[in-house]
Image (cartoon, rainbow, N blue to C red):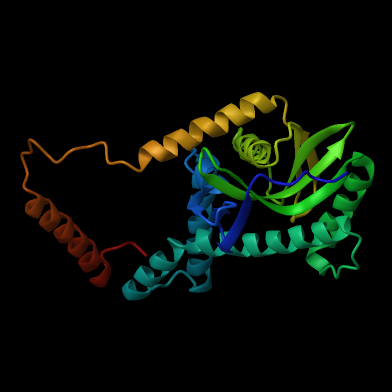
Length: 280
C-alpha cells in the first residue's frame, strides 16, 4: 500500500519548524507545530515531576556536603536545583530520540545497532510490531494542515484491515490524560487535509526506558473527538497570541514602587543567606 500524492509539500527547514510549499512556488509558514499546540494543556504530572527532581537534587547535594554548606554554596545549589528537571528532561529526550530511530530501523528491516540501555524496549517493540498486523507505509512523515496552519512529524502511518491509521511511539513512564490522543488527532487532521484520505484509527505505543521496561499499546477510542479536541487547542493557541488585557486603568501602587519592593525582597533573602541566617 502507498500513500496518494499529496496536495501540497511540507518541509522542515529547521527542527520543529514547518513550511508548506505550494505548486505556484509560494509558501505558507512557518507553522505552529502539533506539539506546540498540545503544549498549552495543563500538565499537573509534569509540574509534580519537576518539583521532585529539584528536591532530589537538593537532597543529594546536601548529603554529599555532609550537611555542612556555606551560604554562598547553598545559593549555587539552589540555582542548579531550579533547572535540574531541564537536564533530566534533555537526557530523556536524547534517549527517546535514539529509541525512535531504532524503532524506525526495525520497521524498515535495517541492521540497527542497539545500545544496552535500549535493548529491552527495542525487544518489546519488535514483539508488538510482529503481532500488530499493521503495514507501516511511511515513518517520520512531515504533514501539515493548510487551513488551520500547523504542521508536525508523525512517527508512522500504516494500513490495517483496509483502513488508514497513525501510530505514535512513546518512551514515557505512563499515559497522562488525553494529550496523546489530541496529538495523533492533530496528525490525522493534517494527513486528511494533505493526502485526501480518511484516518480511521490511531494507536499510542509506549515502551518504557526504565525497569521493568513495561510496554502498553492503547488505541484511541474516538478519532472524531481526538481531532475535535486538537482543533479546540489550536484555536486556543491562536487566540492566546493576542494580548486580551489592556493597560492598567486603576492601580494603588506605581509600577516603579512594585519593582523596588521586589528588588528589596530579593536583597533581603540574599543577605540572610550571606550572614548564615538560613538554617543549613
